[in-house]
Amino acid sequence: MKNLAFAFLLIPAISFGADLEMAISIKDHQFNPAELKVPAGKKIKLIVSNLDSTPEEFESHQLNREKVIAGNAKATIYVGPLSPGKYTFWGEFHEKTARGVIVAE
Image (tube, rainbow, N blue to C red; front, side, top):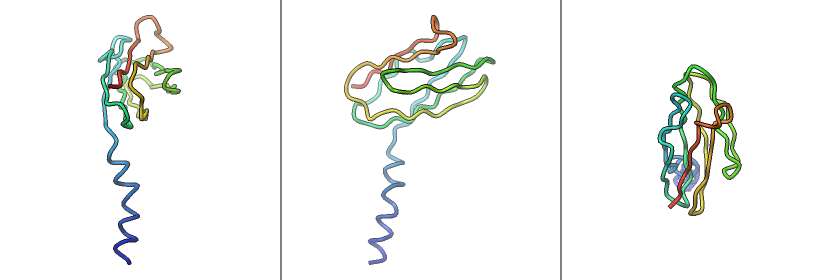
């Protein structure tokens, strides 16, 4: 019985560990890569590194996310699980150049 209770305690840790970690950077007010392919139906842990000295805001209406990332800092943004499709995002402070898309396949 104790082993069964212990197994249930591990379920949240196992499911958290199942997240797929992807990285994207901001440099010269542009996202790199500008297109990020991810598997559909999987929760994604997106690590965004802002390599610029100025802040940028990761924003996406389709993903229902917005997060200000300080200059020379990192942020973690969880998305998904996503249905197959394209999900646009942009940097609100430099909207003309900081643009990207997540493609769930």
